[in-house]
Image 1: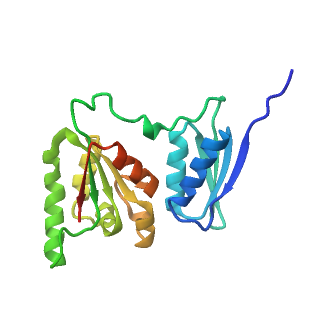
Image 2: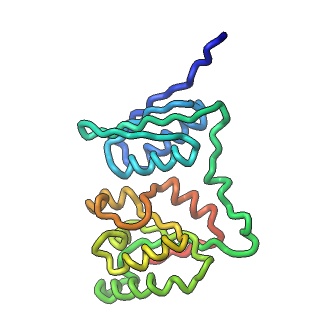
Image 3: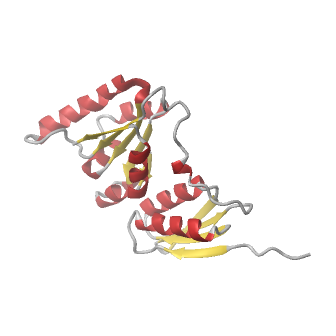
Length: 209
């Protein structure tokens, strides 16, 4: 009986910021179709983003943390090619209803007065439910990630949107920049690769700043 050799690969992404770690892992998965991967990263945003990406490609993932380095061990059973699920995730009923992605780039709406801008942004997010079932994703980047933490004036609204099926993401690099990674209370962390893919899949992208 011939023993089948398992394809293994190790990726050291320490010192890299998102989306570089995810792109390295994506290339490794698509080029080698490895059944087992070990990925090393050194920040929480990369940990969450790589973990979610591998899960989307059919890998089961465990992780450990030692000396400032996260070690992800990923395994996928079988020899089937990894399926790029983000390319096949278009809803079957796309023709019946639009998928609207709202990209929010600031915690203030408009410029001129930040206090007023903050109030306008709160009002906008509380009113966005009027889009109904067409509201598909909310993605928060730059200072807008502050709206996803415990002190956010719209946290309860965002949590309700998420419960209703709206996909919510906050930029992992932005959370790291503001020191807010551990304070996020709603949605997942995302990276530029996911953001680009989401804007490609959306029927309409609305940018709010």
